[in-house]
Length: 164
Image (cartoon, rainbow, N blue to C red; front, side, top):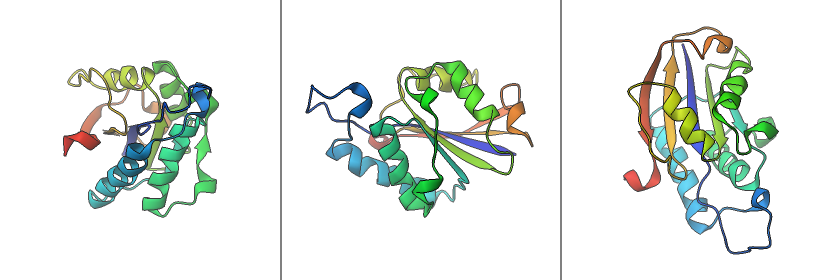
């Protein structure tokens, strides 16, 4: 059994319009939402062995805030350039290349691709817009990540800051 946690980056700042999109930081709400959502996962007894992130500032900072709550070393975060505004197919490719020693992995990325990818995981799932700092947990009955795409999957939960 393998479990993937899909996380949209926390709320970002639009305070400096001269910054390139890639460099936008988290705003105050994002800086408080990310640790709060991570703590909710810790309370659920979620096990994450592998943290994978877009290198964009807002996604990577969200990932680092989650790592802090999980006592996971930031230097072990796997940054994947292709996750910056990735289409659905890229998410599958990234997952298929996760080390099989990893049982639970978290991927931090951006809309619109993350919402499109989330909706491709199950015919029972329909998310119009994955909110900032939303987390979708999906388990797959597999031993190898390479088998994820075609595997039978179960939705574990969908949570986001404004859900309570």
